[in-house]
Length: 211
Image 1: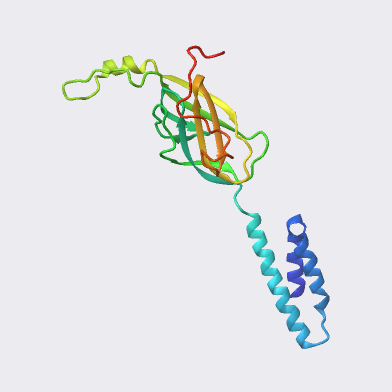
Image 2: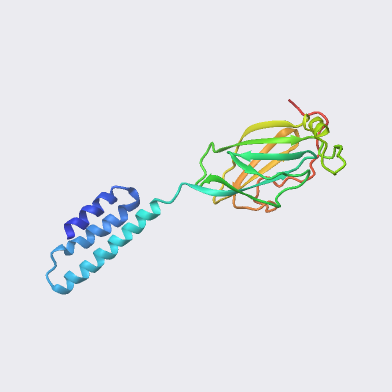
């Protein structure tokens, strides 16, 4: 019985995660041939508990590397963000100078941040959300006039860096003037001094964006 347990522990102990447990197991194994029945029973109990501990460590090692993350948007511009996605996960419509009020499930973020971590953000923008659109006799948008309005929509796609985080949280996407985007994936809320993107919701927009 002890030989089988030792063989199993030896296999797991090859990982650095289990080096300390393996050392403790070898120490306990000195009682493999105890001189008294009490010592034998004590060693069996300790070896069994240690074996269970190693199994628990194995379960911890199997924790997922990616975590689910709600997606929320912040629009710091006068345009309307009709829709957007971050790494393929969709976000809600975000009106001018609005955001943070709703979350959409779900994107994914790595449990542990690594250098070079990036996000792909795609969105559709309405530059004139307050532009008048004709309506028919039933109060519905006139299809032809809506097509005229929608012809001004623009589609964008950027790849941005995700700043370092200690604890993974939600995916927070900030839309800035001149089609600039910032993404955060930590568990710190906007407004906290530690948050990297505490921009005002009503940011000044240049008449001509730099190229």
